Length: 183
Image (cartoon, rainbow, N blue to C red; front, side):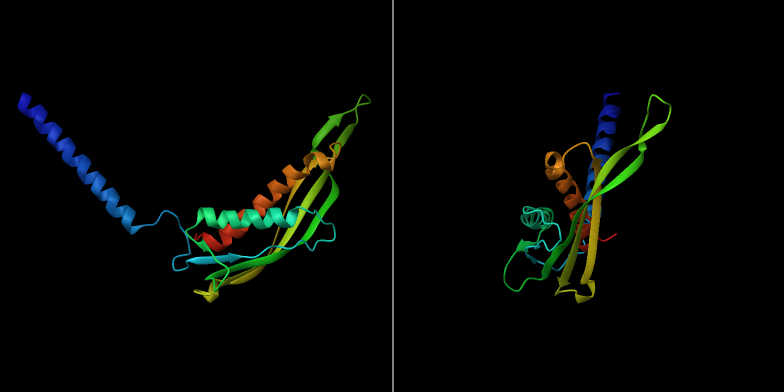
């Protein structure tokens, strides 16, 4: 009986070892990152000037820093100012706050009527030029836009930083995915 227990343990150890070896082989054959940036080593991300009619004075610097951080922290690319494999540049073309009404936020008033709660919408639009010197066919010029709604009874100064971060993060996600993701 003692022999069978040792025999089972030996089989389990052998099976565990084979499974780990198989996982190692599979991991070396397939990259889980899904990155289309395989040969590119360097990136240059220029400042995105704010050329929108309504100017948020901090937006250009915040957006430029955030997009640089995204690429330098989430890829193996190294930042450079000379002869980059990838060049990312562009401009902020729209920054607007417009009134809107969302019907899902309704209240019933004492007379039985329905009152829609007024909201404002922050929209940011960014024009992007992406140039890939290693794979020129991947280069593009695109415009990205996103928005966030907020209650109009809250002053813009109270929520602007939060809403701007939300919208710029969404835009940067779209840009990053279009450049890096290989779905």
